[in-house]
Length: 168
Image 1 (cartoon, rainbow, N blue to C red):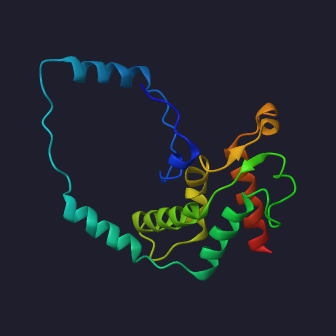
Image 2: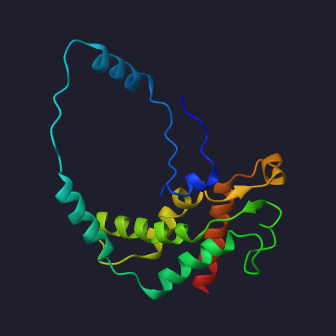
Image 3: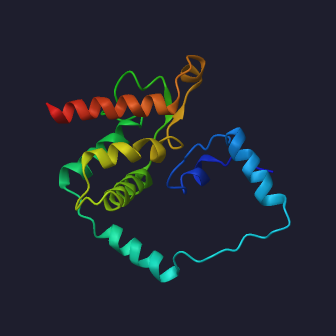
């Protein structure tokens, strides 16, 4: 069976991505293909050397200074005890994201930039990976939970507020 991991172990995972149940049609296909007499033939798509080349390519994607600053500022604002954390957040978050979140946010944004054919990381790349990088690193308080406020709600608001400040 599965069980929830402690926060220290969750932090080791780059992303938290929620996967919903399959549709009825998908579930029927799963049942048919996994319980029949034919064994699927597996083929290698990439090898270990390919993975290493992709990792090296991603690490070479340039990141402008203002993108590094946006990522650091966003992560720091999740920490309720810091001065830069907004007042509205302090009663809602018991623990914010650590430095590993910034590393993963930059690497995730670099990967997204490479996958979309961009020659450098853009703000849109950071904003796209912010939620899956931060959602399991921002721990909400009982107050937040009782009001139905999730870590994703908090992250979305932080991203919007910080982005609005950048535009000014």
